[in-house]
Length: 187
View 1: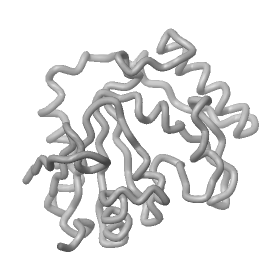
View 2 (view 1 turned 120 degrees about the horizontal axis):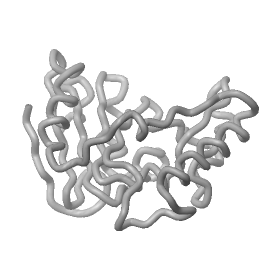
View 3 (view 1 turned 90 degrees about the vertical axis):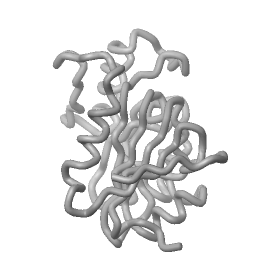
View 4 (view 1 turned 180 degrees about the vertical axis):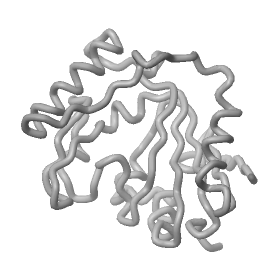
């Protein structure tokens, strides 16, 4: 695995940000193995720190319930940058630049107060997603990106194209990109 730290500012080039090339043959294990090696200082957790999203009821009701679960676990109604909610967020990147269920053209992209929100539109099925403030409340954020269908979106995200939801992620901690050769932007 080849890691290259890039100086500068903005997504993909800020302090603590790494762009990683992961050989396609190791994509299924390489990033997880590398993240595990780098996680020695992370607190060990038990099953009480894993909280699934219940999907019964309406999407809005399910989002509200999950937000309550997260706030109870966190112990506060508001996030504090000095005390991130997550040790690590592992995110993907869609060909349209979406991440989590932050989909281009949906109103949830502007949500800054709720922690969890329903996503109506953008896809045939309703979805529930964590909002930017919650996704950004992480000590370590990693994007795993694979496939030629992601190459254009990745290039635009790394260039800071704010039309793509993934380009708007600004974690309080470090940000790493694990990218296979097929998704890697061409020079």
